[in-house]
Structures are given as structure tokens and as C-alpha cells.
Image (cartoon, rainbow, N blue to C red; front, side, top):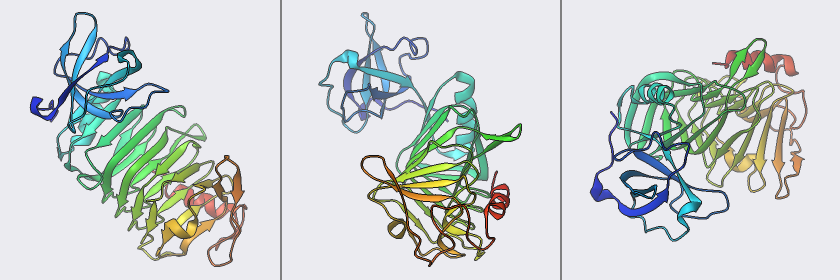
Length: 333
């Protein structure tokens, strides 16, 4: 399942060893290269293979995409060990298990179909999942983030399709309270989910950037008790969801008084949430707000055309937060 890159696919460059990964990184291992804070480099976030370890403690790495040699100081960069995963049956769930056992924090999914048969892959530790491309890397199934509240799970450049439940879910109810890792989706498509496309509750650092959520049976994006999702990116779309026709489902939905959706200043509800069935393009029992360039949150005024006022705890068909919390229970896992 896991293989290294072919040597012909890469171009040479160097990066200094990081003490935390020295014991794991060896010749032939796949790595992701990350420019450290304050350093701008187009190769940051790219993957490659360690070809040689120098006597002075430097790694020789060959990168894909015909990358040019580094032009910045070698000491300004670091490497992180990754698993590179070929498509196949249960390829993602097996990779998540192996990454956790080996204390690896990043997975690269090659283009192709990673078939989980519509089942949910549970992630309960900090992890980065990178796909080969949004159109080329397809996961048949969904993701459920558990873990600790301070953890982060990053997912980018892939499509989640045909989950039997939520496409992406951030919810972990333990000892009477919601916990679990925060979700960060970047250039991800979530399609044909059996429940909501994306659902979060109890965590407030969740982000979506340039994501597309479509053809979910329930709501496109639903935020439950104590949750916050921040959306950015001009290519964001929440469309053609609520395929079951239930009036309690919406394109965008905050289902309780403590739930929130924040939109970057370049976005509006009207530009991202369109052509959804059920109750319409949005419904708010919590807050839907725009964040301006200075970070100020500006509540959106309700136009009376959708299912409840924005920026307030009440409204919609059930008349208040109680109905919203029931809805949250319906979509938790």
C-alpha cells in the first residue's frame, strides 16, 4: 500500500534535519517539506523522498512537480515524515491506523479511489491528510474527528463522496460535554453524504477554505451546540443539499443558540449557499456573521426569506434552541 516516489520524478534540493524527526527519517522515506515561520517558499507543503543523509547532518531530498532547488538558507526549513498511500480498499483507514501506531502525523493519498465502502474513518489524534488533487483523489466514505480539544486535523486537496453518515463530522461527546479535534478543510469537496455534508459541535477553531459541499441528504453545513465554523475562499460553494426535502434541513444551519458560522469578508450567504432544497439556503438559531478585514464580526441582517433570524438564538420552524439541540443529537456521529 505504501511506496516511495520514483527517482525520475524529482529534482534535488537539501533541507536540514529536525531533531524531533531524526530517529524516523531515513533514506527512501517519504517526507513533506515545510517552510518555517517567516519563510516564503513555493515548495512548502510539497512531498518528496529522502535520497541521501549527509555526513554533516543534512538530508538530500528529491521533490515532485519538477521543483527548483532551494534558494533560501538551509536552516530555515524542516521535514516531517509522511505515509504515502496508494488507492485501494480501506486504504485510508489502514493508513490512519498505521500512522497512529508509528507516531506519524501526515498522510499523502495518491490520486485514485480510496474505497471505505461508505463507512466512517475515525481520527482521534493530530493528523494532516493531503490528497493528490481534489478531482483525482476520491475517498468513498466519511471522516469523524475525535481526539482532544487542542488537537487539529487538516484535510486538503481531495473529495469525500458517498458517506453513509456525515461527510465530515467533528463531534465527540464525553462525560457530559463536547470535545474533539478541530477540523481544517482546504480545497475539499464533500458530495452525496447520507446525513449532513459537514457537521461540527463543541469546537470553535474549525475552518473551511475553498470547499464545495453538495447533494447531502440533510444540511450542507450544520453547526451544533457550542460549535463554530469559519469559512473563507472565493471558490466556496454549498449547493444542492437537503435532497431528502425535509424542511428542517438547510444549506447552512446553526442549530442552537451557542452555534455559529463566520464568513470571511469576501463572502456572503447568497454567494456561497444556493439551490438547496429542504427549508432553504440557510437557517439560524445561533449566529451567522461576516468577519471583516480587521477581524470584526458583523452580524448579518435577516431578510425574512429564509428559516430564521441571523445573529439570534430563536427562530425557524421549531421556534427556539430546544429544537436545534434535538437536531444536533440527530447528527452527532
